[in-house]
Length: 545
Ligand code: AMP
Image (cartoon, rainbow, N blue to C red; front, side):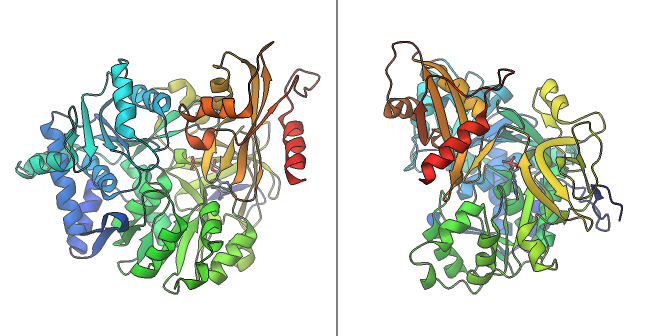
């Protein structure tokens, strides 16, 4: 092995060259009666054959509405079976699925849907967390969302101006499925099939555009590392709108014949523990915060988790102690850590059950197949092993680009195809990687990426706020939490609660600052840059005391 921080994954296993539709057909042939999806909160179970038929019917229903291959179809709902059916139906019809975070508030929804020109939106009705219909109706009344031609409601009820999900599916059922075969013949593995909103290395959300080939292969390799097969049942409590759920979960399930178990609409530790026990799940996914919440649940000892074997912890730095507890107390002897980002489909590094224990709990493992990574210094030169620098990824997994944004794409992917991740890492001589920090101004609260710039810009829209600086502070529960230091306009008078109330209805709850301080000035460098590290240290000290 060279002593440079440059690693190339094995090419022993060929890349999958089919489309998502091909993969679903293959699953329905290989494991027709095998359980594909169990949605506990909906009391619903589907075999692979049933999942294919329902997805085909919904695809035909979408075509019947006049939607065409290449159209963008948004999905805005917490975890449910209809999410999965929509994912496969759009793929079968060659339509591009646009994942919308169910925590988004109207201004964020409008931005995302209009940015990629969604023609249809499949949405949940109301949950305990949000009234989706109300938010869409309000935007429509203001003349927004003009690109949307169809609204499809996941609900038993009929609602004016909305198609009903079941009716669209029923409508498709009577149509000739040959139409899908004809579309299938025109689809290529390299076609864009999914857009996921992410902020990349800067503040404004952008639509990372991914192909069948990108996400199917990542799902295949992530599943292989966990040795998934048709006897496995994987509990997926991470949100489906994120690649952790819909790629590493749903697509891995279809490729490996593994059953996916959804425990609840949104993460709920008790529901996950119960689902694992009842369904005898062999794997479970989670960001570190989710595992901490499960381990710390007051009834944890009462659950039988002996069926567990594997899973993935990823999305944020994974504390060594939490990993050790997951192995010992959750019986997950083969659990792996993954590292990646949406723009790389997502996983680039993953530990393996055969790695030595210290590497399995303290690193993100080694390079994934068919992927290449280098660590570069500030001049762009590859560093020596053990020397920190920015992690860059190249290979099949790199997204096609940000939707309709050549400039931002060129800022992230260079002319040689390297995706510059904004993460700081070191790679040792055996190829194990450790994520040690970020060059991007981002914080991660319980697995949700937050870009301070976006919140700063939003706070600035308040007439009484002259300037705001947002940064992450340490949190036992969430890893990091949002803190804002605010300088008010002259003679203005705002309280912490006023600021929180201003944020609450307009930005996702996880972006609302947990801590707010009013200041007269910010600590600055001599060159006039705000010193966020000084503010962060001061807050961490204050919050600890
Ligand atoms: P996303 O695009 O939402 O998947 O977020 C990707 C970002 O999450 C990466 O660029 C990292 O900053 C962070 N991340 C993901 N996995 C890990 C991990 N295992 N350890 C540390 N940071 C991680």
